[in-house]
Amino acid sequence: MAKQFLTFRLDNNQYAVEVHKVQEVLEYKHITKIPCAANYVEGLISSRDRGISVINLRKKFGLEEIELNKECRIIVLEIALNGSIDENPDDIHIFGAIADSVQEVIEIEDIDIEAAPKFGNNISVNFISGIGKKDGEFIIILNIDSIFSSDEILNLEDLVQNPVLLAQMEQNKQESETAEA
Picture 1 (cartoon, rainbow, N blue to C red):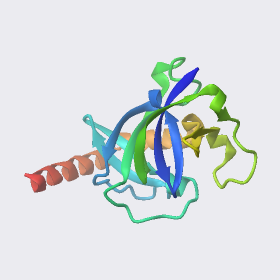
Picture 2: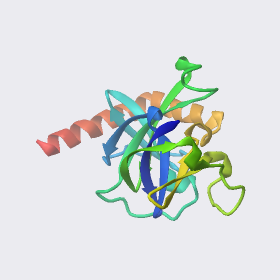
Picture 3: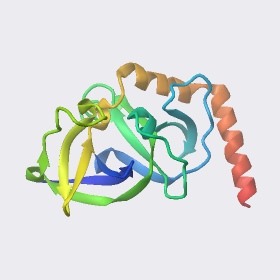
Picture 4: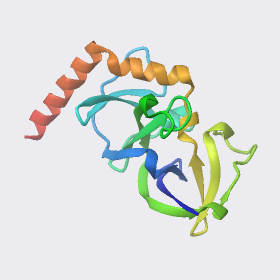
């Protein structure tokens, strides 16, 4: 059976997440910085009139940082704290992840997905659900629900609830809308 994945690039490697976990893909935009946050947390953005924490996947995975450019995108993802989104719809958490670029939605047959390697990768095998292959290129399929611990997810949620940060984010949004007009 084939599954659909959104593919994106980090550090010249192709990654994928299951499409049903993707809420939207945004152009990179101003991010309100959060003081004293984990080093991989870039800050907050406003999307669909709600605050969303944004993380830098390069930092989270220990990859070399690059200067953000017009190809960078924010992938807004839904993750489940305990179990799957289908099992626990009240336990859905939303965050944005910065990718170097977003490629396309592809289908990969289950038989074309191999188990995650046990070594040889600087990204924890706990984050990888498998390795796909499409058009002769390997695709690292992420297990997006396991990238963060429960505490990290709850900390991201706490940031989104902070009224001072939300006010700053709204001010930044209004300033950027005024500048565009």
